[in-house]
Amino acid sequence: MGSIGVSELIVIFIIALIVFGPQKLPELGRTIGKALAEFRKHSAELRMAVDQEMRELERHTQELETKAREAVEPAAPALPPESPVSSAAIDAYQGVPYRPTPAALSSEEQHTVEPAAAPAVLPESPVDAGAIDPYQHVPPQPAPAAFSSGEPPTGEKPADGHPKPD
Image 1 (cartoon, rainbow, N blue to C red):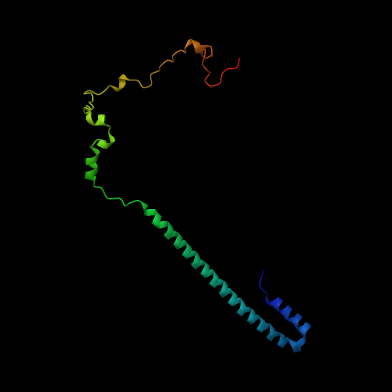
Image 2 (cartoon, rainbow, N blue to C red; image 1 turned 135 degrees about the vertical axis):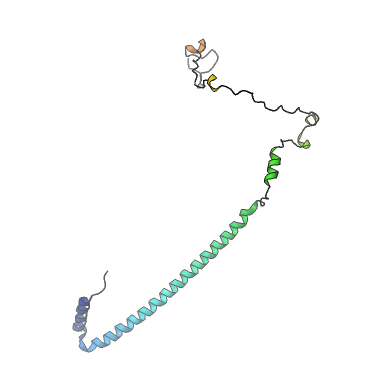
């Protein structure tokens, strides 16, 4: 919708002059002016009331969000804080093999002593990479005679697990 232009305003003024006459026109103008002033006053009050309600709703929403965050945040640090471990302690621990506690071992296991494992020895000469062919073709093995006919051996079920109907 557009605003009222000058030509439309002149047409409205002429119609009002004809309908109300020249004697009542000034009185009508005052009445319309007062009515417009009252309308603006009430619309401003309404706008202020709506804005105040919106601010209260936003404040209430922010309070609820803050309470929700506070309720969730304490649950997050349930784990104890990590203690810093030096790299020297880690290096020292990596060389120690696992040994179960005596309480975890049975009485026989507590009295038996296992010999230490021999260290892995590498061959003195490297293996010739050309001696092994990783892509060597291996011919398939022939199937047993019982399966060559497609029938399973007697007393056995076929691969699908269901007995063959007679």
